[in-house]
Length: 397
Image 1 (cartoon, one colour):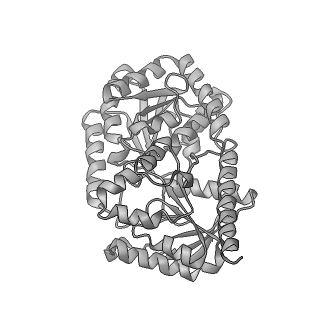
Image 2: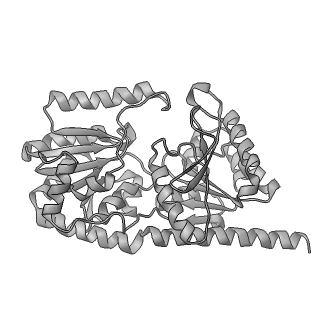
Image 3: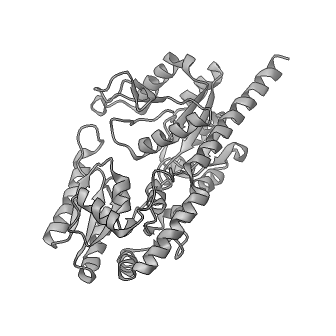
């Protein structure tokens, strides 16, 4: 599993991969991580039973994309006897070097596109020079995974080989993310989190960055708080940025602007920072909101739904429709006004919120159980290996 950020650094996708890898082990697939050391992390270590290998990289070096690719390539070669498949998370193989290496070394390579508007094929074609030529190399890969149908449509529109396209959505551990049984448990959990003062709790989970739409949510919250003065908005996720984060100055300025907006308007808004207790926050929430401008999938949505929390999300270029059936397990909104309106609707009507929350749990158990999703990955890996072996056998007949 190749990616840039992994534990102990926080990354939403890293959190997801850790859960997925545990399920893959049960399906007979052993996985290891190859990630950056950011100038301070050990070259090798085991985290929660997962072996993590690291290549040398830190933001302060100012490496070009090509130089970074060479660093990663060096590590892929170094650990070549430890793996059969290179699974790239995100568009890291910008120059096709990893794909060429896989072909030469008889490894299989799987590329997973994770963010619509960033690493989907149509976006890449508009951003990078000579991308058509680069795709000629990348299409030598064995499989492409799209985590949403919107990304799959981008892939098809770019006229890439559809026989190599595999749609595998994100999943959630439905045994870990569960609803609380009664209100007493909910109030007890609120107390443990220091949220006893929150009569109604609306939750946002994610880094407080512009892409996630935290500014839209705080603006919409003015109307929500006017209607429900005892309600609180809780933002769980990274809200301070340091040298490990690219563009840390602009990121921190964005957060400061939101904090000032909340303070000047006396808004009930709480920033928790990064937390390893997101499940607890879901379980004691009344509504979950993700007003993101773009997502690859939005795993936090199905985590909230698994906990029977009704969700309010923005359209996200069609990605929202992957998980939310409008009016059945939550609401998909188009603008700030509709965002506040739907939050208020759910806070006004606890019975409606309960029905949508229960429907969300049913929907997730049926379509997004991580147990079933892991089996799809395992099936794909075995298919990729078997196709590769067939090609090798033909070559030597």
